[in-house]
Length: 214
Image 1 (cartoon, rainbow, N blue to C red):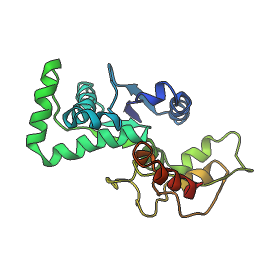
Image 2 (image 1 turned 90 degrees about the vertical axis):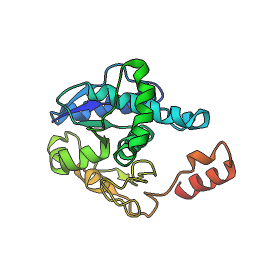
Image 3 (image 1 turned 30 degrees about the vertical axis):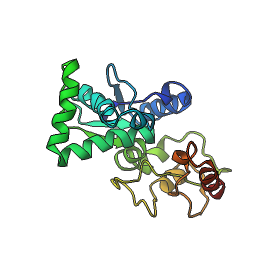
Image 4 (image 1 turned 30 degrees about the horizontal axis):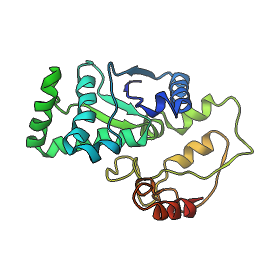
């Protein structure tokens, strides 16, 4: 197994441990990650407030760079916000040739072009479907027998692109939790919104949503 790898900004800073653990996991299951050369920020949620076109061009640039790396069709993305932004471009340009042309007009400044021949995949998708719980279980050295875990998915890896799990009743984490020897805490909040996008505009709503989950 071999994937192009887009870590994104957070995994190079505040979520560095997520980057380290992702790479360690993939190495343990003999999967190779090839980091996209010269990648930049995907825009997260901030770019949209500045310019709609910028919010499209930033993730599109990373996809265009990935397309230059021959032989690999899947991009593995651990960060859910990055995954959503890159996936959004992948899905939109399939249906909107005018949008693709507009994006390529911007990318032309860097002598880049986007064609839409790659597949953006979340880490959970790859671990669940390409690697699978069985292989994870075989690699476990110290089972988490005393640990009880409530699987929380959030919005961005599930919506609006329900590619690998059911947004209303996600279940892909549970077999993986059991594979490492832990117990699954049964609850119904795994796919609920955490309110992140509300924190700057309606903090009381965001806090209420977080409170409900916790």
